[in-house]
Image 1 (cartoon, rainbow over the protein chains, first blue to last red):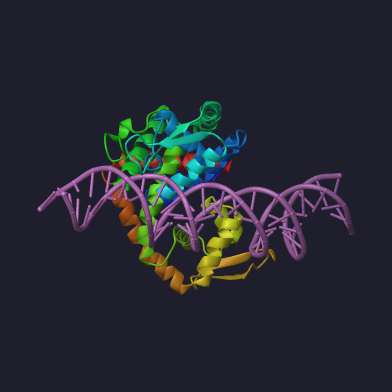
Image 2: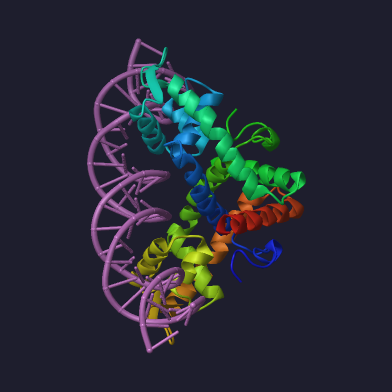
Length: 151
Length: 151
DNA sequence: TCACAATTGACAGGTACCTGACGAGTTTGC
DNA sequence: GCAAACTCGTCAGGTACCTGTCAATTGTGA
């Protein structure tokens, strides 16, 4: 039975290795979202970084890493990629000489504002057929798991 | 508010970019599961492959790819890594000269049987505090999303 | 005040994913 | 029967993640 067949509930039952299911979903969603972001010249991690900076301008690289659930090295690469395209800029931290503050540039903010609806729309397509209740339950589960992993 | 603080429900609300949440969870779970599998000398993708073969011995590389939500190239690498460790073997496909059949070896089956409880136990820890209902809802959501991505 | 621990960002090098292409083989439709 | 389309597995080369390490800096606790 392929992924596109049968009911969802006989795909992964209670005894599934849940990390396998998460992996499967992530690989599929990443491909779908990369498709959308390609139109804007953005990659998935770059978009995630712009999203963090949209919420909290001036984050350090380490803070971007924590918010994204990535390592500092990954966050360094995410920021570097954006900087190379003129989408973010770094400035010295006012009080901590180790850290930079990272801000989206005007171009970065505009690109994020353009890309986000496309991403949300694709996600809406993928979640169509799921009730608001099912969506909320999934978000709750993910919040708990992300917190548990970060503990 | 860091991941470890505040209630889960004010971490990611209805307007979260859900692919970001999936990414966050996956990065965290992968690190946790890699920790467990390291004891057995297995990687996450190798474990996934052994799990597919445990369910359906004799899969082709392309079938492993589909079941894992990966590309054929990724599945080739997953199988090659297991083969290099003597954990799977390939044989010619009885009717399709393009394809191989991949079977776990005795060593591969035994390693999988040893590793799986450790993975499940760690997942149980991560999901502790979540009701059976919440877990079922998450699994249902993931099944639908995986199917939607594969469509 | 100071030694030690922790944090920051980046370097170097690794693995886990991917795309595009290819040749061999199979399936399809006329 | 055969051309076209599709599938399979792999090659080559790419990006997305990671660990370990380092020097500089800050935080902590005695």
